[in-house]
Picture 1 (spheres, rainbow, N blue to C red):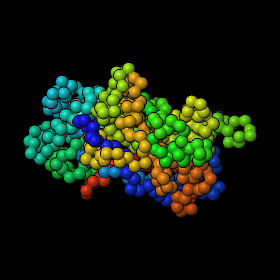
Picture 2: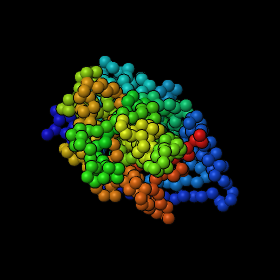
Picture 3: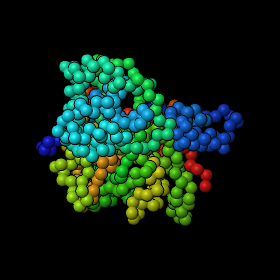
Picture 4: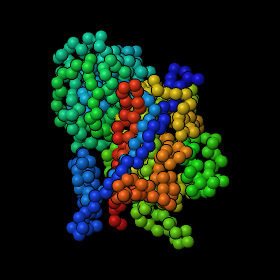
Amino acid sequence: MPSPGGWSGEVLPQVEEFKYLSGSCSHVSEGKIGEREIDRRIGAASALVMRGRVPDRRRVKKELSRKAKLSIYRSIVNARSHLTYGHELWPKRRIGVAIGDQILDLSVIKSLFRGPVISNHQDVFDQPTLNAFMALGYEAWRETRRTLQVLLSANESTLRDDISLRTSLYYNQNQIKPSSDATPQGICSSECSHHAPPCRDWFVLTNFTNKRKAEPIDVNTAACSSDELFALFFTGDYTDFYSSRDHATNVGIMFRGKENALMPNWLRLPVGYHGRASSVVVSGTPIRRPSGQMRPDQLKPPVFGPSKQLDIELEMAFFVGGGNQLGEPIPIERAHEHIFGMVLMNDWSARDIQAWEYVPLGPFLGKNFGTTISPWVVPMEALLPFAEPNAVQYMYWTMKQQLAHHTVNGCNVRPGDLLASGTISGPDPESFGSMLELSWRGSKNIDLGGGETRTFLKDGDEVTITGHCQGDGYRVGFGPCMGIILPALQH
């Protein structure tokens, strides 16, 4: 049955394809550059990125003397929308909406939001992040979406016929560069279904510099663009669940045996743990190989060093919009009103560190060194046309169940909190969401094509997870979820 006033089912994740594409490794010419020089170059490239001097990963890739690409493509069940809220710096940060390859500056038209909720909060569109907008809650999001749909409709003259307003309103995404000193500032989101041919529709938090006006555009014929925005997110708190039964079973078999694959509580409640929000990063941020304590030989004492079993975890995650008061649970019947939108996630894992440390309190250093999310946050209302009741492939626990369980003891969640699905895997290797499963704990090689194989990630490997929702003649994507592995620091 549909939830009162909201989406009736989960959108995650109907898998159409999950393929490891051919990887390639270009090696340094024989005898010309040694291991130390390779490590130095990789470290130098990383330092440039971390200091904000290199906003584009191409410079990093240029510095790498050897690397391999590991790409994961995964299609997700249908979704739809055509606008993108964003976040710009011209010269201050503010909120924008993407229409095709243009950005609409919401601060310019904030006075046009005259609905019963937003009319009293128009200042949220002057804020440096979308957190204040998110905190207004479900009805405010819906009202804003409806207002934008009207303003961008073919029959509405307010923007269509005001050339002066449109000249100050639109900016070209292709002419805007990411801010060189950008740091995570807030959460954004997306939506709409307007008259134009299919355009991308996400909320996106993006820091920009270099104010350059675009030519006025025809909102009636705004075309879809494949151009990429650079987005940065701030996460308040981060919780990772363990909601895929196939994944939990596979891991349980590896570590505890087939007879004890699932723990007694797994089918009774959504198992989860609190992660580290400070290391949640946007797509394109390099990931440093972690070092830690592990015990590869059970007959010998543990050792300290770089992880040798660095892994991916293919996940989906959602951002909390409106929160709840401490001590007041969110009932599952109203959970949809608190779920703002979704992203792709790669929750990088150091399996050898994790295996040694996780008893009795769960993951710690094997997980908190880096979590990558895609730049586009697709709002739940934009996904409504494609929601199917109880049709979450490979997921035993739903997002609404996760959120309700998270707060059932009175725990309060806040706008910008991030809740993740846990690794999503299916019953066969083509649908496994981690290298741990694909290599079955390192016992067999994963064929990348071109003579390349892996059991776990090597330094220089680049992992890209992509996902999209396919409609009839259009698609809505989450943007890439990408990271490149840098070598561990020398201790």
